[in-house]
Image (cartoon, rainbow, N blue to C red):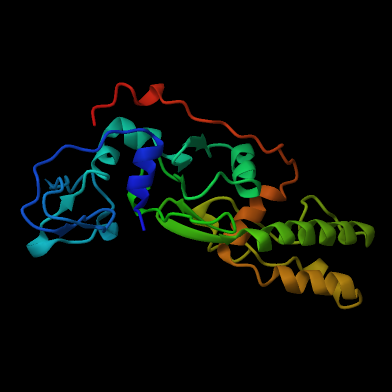
Length: 258
């Protein structure tokens, strides 16, 4: 299985990083893949005041940190800044910076394998800590420091369940402003642990006791995982944008020193 760094480097057409050849096999501290003897190995000492992703690294022998040729380009500042919100496969890259782009990705993802990442801060290391998706049916998304898994067929069904529940709620006289029955659905990583995120509205629950279809829909929606709820937040917004794919051209990488 290839690393996210290797796949992203190929998709973005970045050259491998240059470093002296390793005298023996080693494990990359970033992507954590085993590299054979003779492969490039960059000994690395991050600046403690500017690097904040220590917990995501794999410590080396006696604390020695090593980067492989696939990960090295993603420690270049221009590349780091340019890979904050996108999905990459071997054919190219597409933006995930706007909700319309994410709606496209969730409903019609590109051909696998691919790597999807969304930054939730000004600048984050995302590529080498992300997981590779090998299927359109089970997709991984790296959101800041969190990795979400989304069962896409289940998610697509859930969109219909949520919209149907909202229709029933409206017919029963409930105040309906979103296309779902939840108190709140958040698209931001820091809010995913909020108690209201993914919790049902009390008025829907009260109505469900006398409405078998609504009761069944709410029971199904309450089984969703964190990844499916995050996806649902994008696909059941009050003002839903049409899904839009935005390919990312390569000129922004031409001047990168990698």
